[in-house]
Length: 425
Image (cartoon, rainbow, N blue to C red; front, side, top):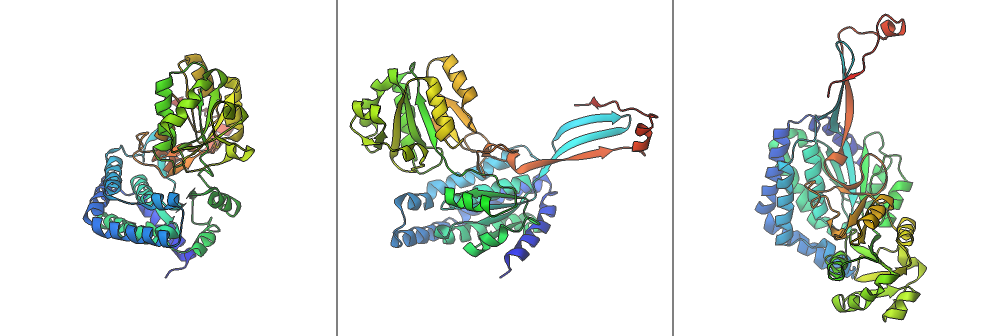
């Protein structure tokens, strides 16, 4: 088995080849990858069952076991996501600037792949399919490491998808590699010579560890503490549907709501929560406990990502208090206002400092596929070149290309020539 440094070196070399693969080849690879998922359906489902049985034998949490699941519907969704990516326009080679510096001296800014992307993810094996598809479409080489709990699923998916890629071009021979051990994670954190970007998808502890132990640029989020705020002017039935969807549609994901803030004048909605979500454990502030029977919320609850059927509820006096609470305790992921007051909505959307802010819709829409990106490699809550669900655009960077005809700087320094700086697009 190759050592991590050798794998990184091979993958970096491959990234220089995948970066210039024609769009037709990258698109064909995605179609072949989608077909391979269907063709190897039984093999994938068998490996996934093995992972889930082992997780149950080791008494891993029900939340984690649910995240592990691949069924026929998920396989269909994975294939559909790859085909959706294939249909999207080519993200590479787009000219975002064209400027005449002087006659015959033309500057262009053009989109290119980032290079070698390292992705470390936990639990969800379908993440490997999304990530592989996005990197293939964007011309990036991929070095992936999944969690031990999904080892069998990831191994089969990697083999199936990689064979499909190589079947369209031998340049992908080392352009999609999979790491297997925890020790390899620590080893690659020092490989800033080869890896251009690290994207962690997993627990707060995982993300923190990576941020603290590498010089490689990191894009990701440490937690998904999403809030929904019920303003004083709201539609009750609409809001109840949105609250239920945001909390219960799939509670084990980072875009499910963990906190519900309720304006005091709208506190009459609280008893209805118990009716529409009897399976959800409510942890309320002191004012909430005066209105409904629930467990008390501690100060830690406002900063906890449950990934479970638990919801913290707090009554606030004003819109500003809700905004301040979210900016102080949230994770900059996704936050929602429920209101029929356009002015209040605009203030919330402008002042909440999160990567996605929403008005009268479910937080569960914060997803690369639902945003029309084809898929996502992860959610970024920082303020670097990509933010929110990171799709193709977030996996591209740019280079400047300058074309001239014997131009020299000395002519401009001596005043013999002058710049025109005329934008052409």
